[in-house]
Length: 106
Image 1: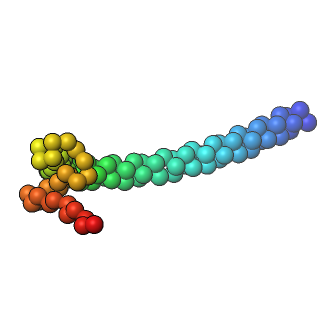
Image 2: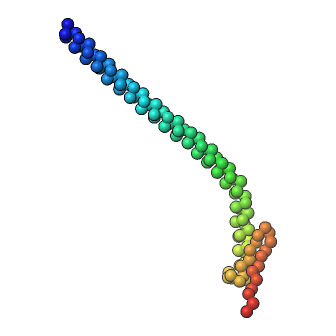
Image 3: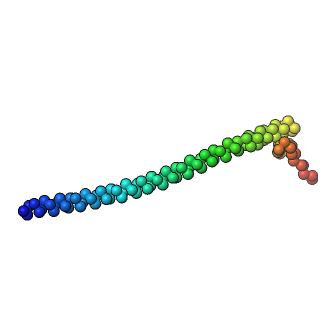
């Protein structure tokens, strides 16, 4: 009889230990799932921000190209007007208007 009681006690202790391990494992799994959910939300936010940035860059591209073209035209004008490039022969083209620097008088 004592032997049976010892076996029952050992089994109860094993069951208690297993239940604690399962509870601990479940807590870890829940915590990991919470962290994954946060990362998924961050991923969605980052994707939206990336799409917005791509949209803005696409909208800005024609303006950037126009400024680049205007700068090229201004540089070409500076070279043809002065024969060589110097600060006194630099011209600026802004919105299709040529701006020439004024010379300072002595």
